[in-house]
Image (spheres, one colour):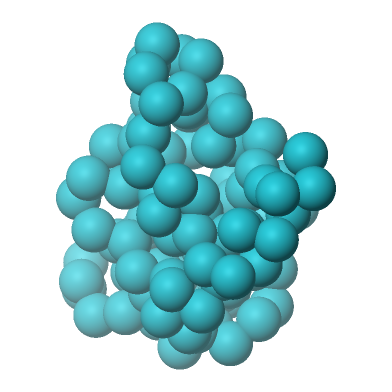
Length: 97
C-alpha cells in the first residue's frame, strides 16, 4: 500500500494518505474509532476534537483541531490544503463559543 498522499478523498485508501495526516494524528483517529478514510466523511471536526479531549482526559493542542478540519473537509470533497489554512476559522469559531 502506498504512503503517497491522495489528490482527492476518493483516492485515499489509508488515513496517512490524507494530506496533513501522519502517524500521531492517525493514532488520535484510531483512539476515536476511525480506522479508514471513509470513516471521516460527514464528521464534525469540532466534535471529534472534543471527543478526543474527553477520551484521553487531556486538552490537545488546538492545531490538532486544524488538522481534523483539513482531513474531514478533504474527505468531504475539498481540495488538499495545509492544515494551517483552517487556523483562523478555528480561532473565530472558538471565540464565539
